[in-house]
Image (cartoon, rainbow, N blue to C red):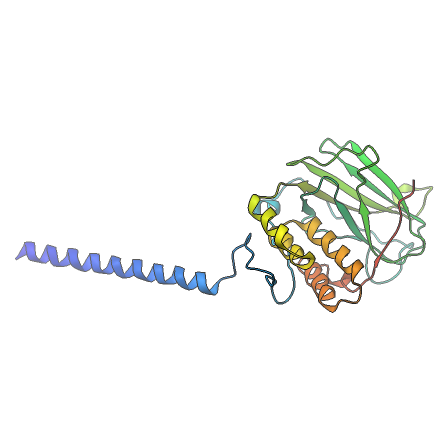
Length: 262
């Protein structure tokens, strides 16, 4: 009798475990159906999400570290409600896959005549510096890192600091308004490269954003908008991408061209 009771308990235990496993398998299957499609996949020509591209920032970029501090101060040389702002995720880290990426910032209406862009390596050594004439412009500005001025290409796995300073008083640089960020060059996987080869300009923005490549998502979309300024779909994509990093107040501002000084 005791042996039968033990066997009965053992069978009940096995049955319970089987039920738990079955439920777990069911839940996994449901998640696979209901969850978002995995990053690094592309289903075809129409692989874009409704609502536009949104940055999926890698977890390791969101960990505490030696990040630039935001030290905005009020300045009489800036007008308007939107501040002088670097277009970069909240934690100030943007990934790139380019040797010579493009950096973006928002220039408000200002009395300042010049802005200064500087890129430094991990040791704080400047590797590129240029002055920009503001020319009473206001909007989103892109600064391209030139490949033809003896500028060293960004190296994979390295972090670089970039800054843009609005020079409110050329005689007193302590009055500058300063925005800073970190750019980190990474390498694309063979899978993502394959996706990009098959994608059109709009799809590429989604692929870059879904894989945490901020600089190319932004510059690719800015270029597409420049070529198609009246495309409502691209305009909506731009607003979605900037909203994903809490820069939605800048999303409706124009993209303007400013040439760096020789």
